[in-house]
Image 1: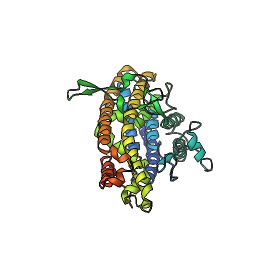
Image 2: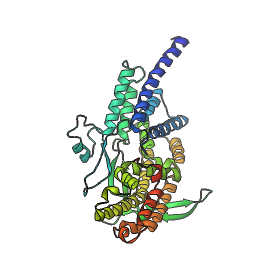
Image 3: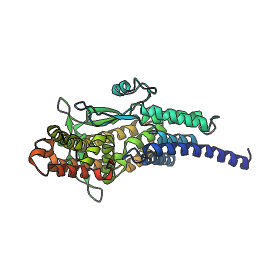
Image 4: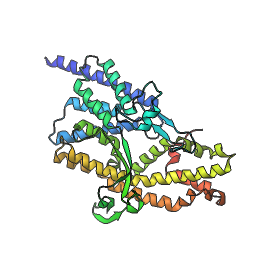
Length: 385
């Protein structure tokens, strides 16, 4: 094929990709602009992390093809293109006031989500629905499969499936030493070892445990593209510094707490004619915020463990690649300690608000509850009246 013809063909192929990406980004912007966490910046961050990982792989002597880059780019952009959800507005039930996302892919779907979707026309979990929407865009923009080849589609599907998270809680840590974190000075040297066990949950037999988010479609057999997209989606605690991770964690919290955001905005006015229930719900709000802050410690510990396992078990990675990735995802310990100190500070200052009596005996309790919300960045993500 002549050079000019080859350039024209490459240009036409790239136009297919750009049209498809524009459709994805337009949908994500339309659906999620203004969301605290799952806004258009989130898939861009996942995409940047995956692309950097592929760059490192190439530098490490690992074969990286155009198809791999396309699959990683489009899987990251589209992995949260569909987020269906509902808010539990039934008082007295588990998760009252919180958002439940209809997450799932194929046969791996939480029973509660499967039950919630029984009466729906589309019973796919969000991750699978996102893949199906991406597949439709691929079919419409590239019916001949010249750009979105079978390999690209296969890798993109596997990568989106791997972003589906399942949850285990309380999940015991493999070793008691996992809770011992090195605190480093400005030179990067360990100056002290901090045991965070006292702020962790416990199993029934007393073992330290935490909130474990894992990705059941991410296995030792997963491709490099799948691993990098999955890491980019759920390992931010290793990639960003404590200030950014705190903000992202708080954004996730407020995105999931629609009722609480509304109640803080209007001073719990919906319960103004039910004073006893009102003080109970304000105490529950304090408990929930403090519990979230404490849960971040175990969550980060598990993400640190999972990241190490992914690097160690994926056969497509070599040691040079692993070392470079460890340097990039080197913030786990700093974030764990930041979460540990932060949870202790918040609990020490606001734990009295966990009792309804505080709101009947302390005239400043409601102001203090608002202060707690502000320390968790509520003012960055208020729900408009």
